[in-house]
Length: 552
Ligand code: ATP
Ligand code: MG
Ligand code: MG
Image (cartoon, rainbow, N blue to C red; front, side):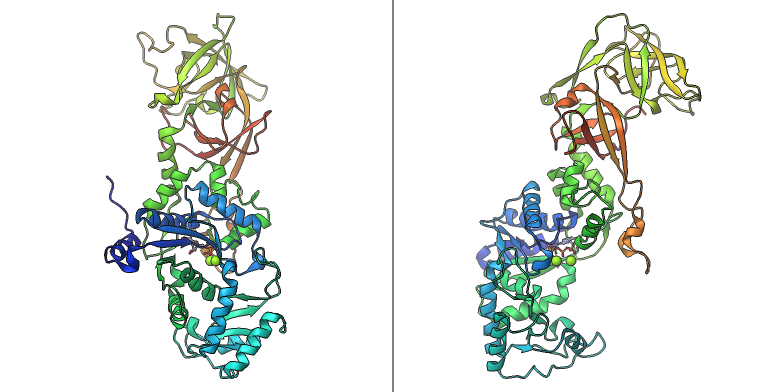
């Protein structure tokens, strides 16, 4: 049993449950804003929230935090639902929307005004920004701060009725303009915005702010542990302040954890959206994207992402996780269960000159070396095959164990083959090999000599032409985000992150490949059929290379 990584939230929840806090009830939520597709950072939050609920016999809600209607859409809502399900999680009851609570939030706002804890401010956005002060300067109070409660009540109603132009009035909490925490300097709770909302249509022309909405949504859903990333630590006093002013069914505990940062990529929806909008990638599900949809298309499995999230732990210290951890996790998952297949990516034709049979020979090989339950597959051996160009060297470097002129190599699952002749074109490039097989070596070692190298191959006449897409990192900078001033993360895009091999040759069993099911192409890596495949032309994505290649 490996050592469990640090996970301080598990410890807090266990302690709370054991002490009988909230009657031992555990309720979490995952609260995405539907303004983009989910990325691997969100996966950390999803795994955390849903797995804590599972582990402590609790519930986890899926709630769309939809307070910025202009940036949100049904497409994103649908994609987020699909991604959460695909990761293997089911939310408690119906999906929630913060917008479900707009009426309740409006009533709570009236309550705050009545208790003299909020006021309508008709200053401009610019004036309000200036009044907030800075880290070194206290804020200054607005002239509207002490207007009568009745006056604010009336103006707030007029805000809702549409009497104010966008940006000409806000509702602010009345807290403390001298607070060292800027979030507590009379933060805005509501603003006027004439925007069509994907859930509530044109019902509202005022929308609540995130901080106001979030704590109250949590309370209305009786969430016990509200888990969020560290940048909200400074917002916690506001979270608690709002709940303390009002009569709410419960007061959830906000706990902050370090966000996931991965090297060689970006995990910010805004930046990912820019990559999509400016067509640096083919879409949100481009296999190079760190989105869940991209990773799924690339061939990542739900288990590999869940294991990765468990492996990195949950702490309060920010760090950068190495991409290789993610790759380790997918290899570990696929090695156990990916059927094996052969595919020659850089084909070199080989004519077997001593092939005496008129028919091809049918070979039956296991789909997986260690798991018989995965069954077997059929391959055909005949007078012409393809091997990979890189497995032949006319002038071999030291230690080269594969095919050389006059040398022998084993063809995986079939014969030992000797290279008798090298055919070249006018430019001197090798275009074909003439070889012979030792027909005593099918499934056994040759007599009197050792053959070390083993290479993969396919029949030239009975293989499938396929397209292969090989991926590299999308960025060639370890932290594209934090580059020097005056540069953009876009400056670090790796122009060679996609290599398309238009014509590779795969063994015939791959004609039945199912999208989303991984194969290990022997010696080349793990591959998955891409959605761009047609019956005429299969397309495979390389998910990840193999850590160890056999008999290289
Ligand atoms: P982004 O910064 O990419 O726009 P966000 O935090 O604005 O992301 P939300 O949709 O608001 O995106 O996030 C939903 C939940 O996922 C939040 O609780 C948020 O804290 C969490 N989350 C977002 N990014 C990460 C990350 N990199 N690591 C861990 N949790 C994250
Ligand atoms: Mg957000
Ligand atoms: Mg954010």
